[in-house]
Length: 55
Image (tube, rainbow, N blue to C red; front, side, top):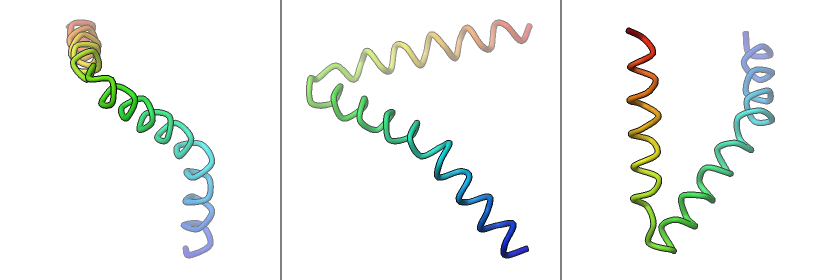
Protein backbone atom coordinates (compact mmCIF):
# COMPACT_ATOMS: atom_id res chain seq x y z
CA UNK A 1 0.00 0.00 0.00
CA UNK A 2 2.81 2.43 0.81
CA UNK A 3 4.49 1.91 -2.54
CA UNK A 4 1.22 2.38 -4.42
CA UNK A 5 0.53 5.56 -2.49
CA UNK A 6 3.99 6.88 -3.23
CA UNK A 7 3.56 6.07 -6.92
CA UNK A 8 0.16 7.83 -6.96
CA UNK A 9 1.63 10.95 -5.35
CA UNK A 10 4.50 10.99 -7.83
CA UNK A 11 2.05 10.70 -10.72
CA UNK A 12 -0.09 13.55 -9.39
CA UNK A 13 2.98 15.76 -8.98
CA UNK A 14 3.80 15.35 -12.64
CA UNK A 15 0.31 15.75 -14.10
CA UNK A 16 -1.56 17.97 -11.63
CA UNK A 17 1.12 20.23 -10.21
CA UNK A 18 2.06 22.07 -13.44
CA UNK A 19 -1.59 22.94 -14.08
CA UNK A 20 -2.08 24.15 -10.53
CA UNK A 21 1.02 26.32 -10.78
CA UNK A 22 -0.25 27.86 -14.04
CA UNK A 23 -3.60 28.63 -12.39
CA UNK A 24 -1.90 30.21 -9.39
CA UNK A 25 0.31 32.33 -11.65
CA UNK A 26 -2.69 33.50 -13.68
CA UNK A 27 -4.52 34.45 -10.51
CA UNK A 28 -1.50 36.38 -9.23
CA UNK A 29 -1.23 38.26 -12.53
CA UNK A 30 -4.93 39.16 -12.43
CA UNK A 31 -4.70 40.23 -8.79
CA UNK A 32 -1.70 42.45 -9.55
CA UNK A 33 -3.51 43.99 -12.53
CA UNK A 34 -6.74 44.44 -10.55
CA UNK A 35 -8.72 42.29 -12.98
CA UNK A 36 -9.85 39.45 -10.73
CA UNK A 37 -13.43 40.23 -11.76
CA UNK A 38 -12.55 38.80 -15.18
CA UNK A 39 -11.76 35.44 -13.59
CA UNK A 40 -14.92 35.56 -11.48
CA UNK A 41 -17.08 36.28 -14.53
CA UNK A 42 -15.43 33.51 -16.53
CA UNK A 43 -15.90 30.94 -13.77
CA UNK A 44 -19.53 31.97 -13.34
CA UNK A 45 -20.20 31.65 -17.08
CA UNK A 46 -18.48 28.27 -17.33
CA UNK A 47 -20.32 26.94 -14.28
CA UNK A 48 -23.67 28.16 -15.57
CA UNK A 49 -22.99 26.54 -18.95
CA UNK A 50 -21.98 23.24 -17.38
CA UNK A 51 -25.08 23.16 -15.19
CA UNK A 52 -27.32 24.01 -18.15
CA UNK A 53 -25.79 21.13 -20.10
CA UNK A 54 -26.93 18.72 -17.37
CA UNK A 55 -30.61 19.42 -18.04
